[in-house]
Image (tube, rainbow, N blue to C red):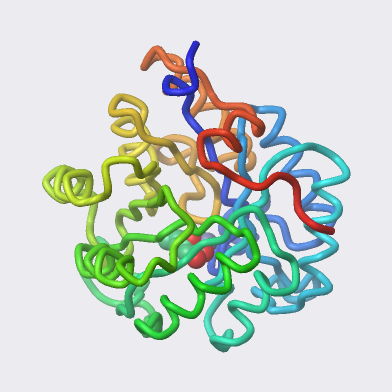
Length: 291
Ligand code: KMH
Ligand code: ZN
């Protein structure tokens, strides 16, 4: 099967908001991150997306020492690609957020493309449970992109709505992005786009022809996006960061169980999951972390 028919599966292990009381398989300690990443690798994931957690409180942390231990532990165990979050979590400063790239020079990192409301909603009563403003100014977009280029880190451009995509297309003329570009269409964040095929089509029409793309989605949007990506030549992100279930009402045993399901979806679409080295070729990555 040619590289074009390979589908890159990413596992987002923890994120900033999912806690063990929602799903006990969310990793908090370095050991838990390493074990879960290894399970995802064995299940067919080529990339892990990481937000480090404070092992005591389980809350997201900007600690480079903890993150370094996680990266080192995973790298010693398997060749999976490491994609570090530059969102980290509520309260992380702009400097802390890009410091993960400066310090650890990962192969990939998330790059968020617009400021937005970011809320947790009650979808039965249509009320807001909690909210924050997720700040991603043009200045941050440009500075982070430049730092990533200097560090040889491929940005995963997080697209929550059309505004973010236009922001990227505008500043792209400065030549600041590692190209070809890689986009992540994020569905179902309250404050961004809901899962919507019309928007999907619009995004695909707007991204540069040689760009690669993947989808992730909150809750049920995770697998709805995965089916579409598998069929339309895109790539897939799953993981407890965005969805605690493996199917309606059934908690996932771990992100790895969602990876197993994504593999089945990919195979039904007559494609194969990309190995980490195949994903490196597809995305033009530099190779393992400099740790
Ligand atoms: N959890 C996603 C909706 C990042 O880490 O930079 C957003 C995300 C962003 O993954
Ligand atoms: Zn993330």
